[in-house]
Length: 127
Image 1 (tube, rainbow, N blue to C red):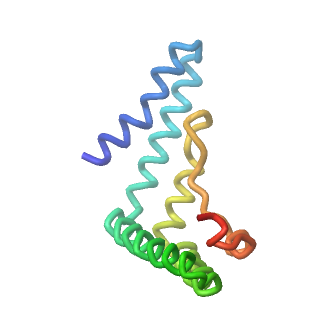
Image 2: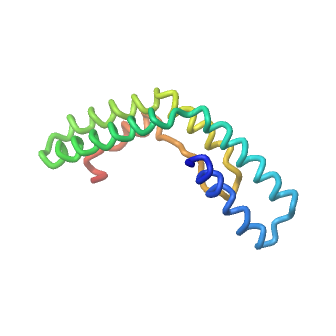
Image 3: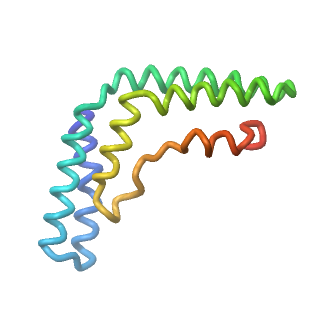
């Protein structure tokens, strides 16, 4: 079911763009790229991503509480720990790889900030 929904969402912009004067060849290239992306995403463990997402939500709540309590360095350390874990996760890495296959004009690829970028921002300043 998720695959069908993903396919429909990926191909929806093709129909809209086709009405705006896109050539058949361009539409075919976009369709092929969308299919490559979809095939790539089959290598992503969706359940593992859901578990990671739930963990991230819990850590986000903890970080928010730490920030509200003025414990900024603890909040930052916890957020960076999660960031490192996500950057090292093979499913997150695979999602980033697959999203680079996204056809132009269908949104921007999924990109996690680098650890250096995460370290440059104090997590409590973003809340």
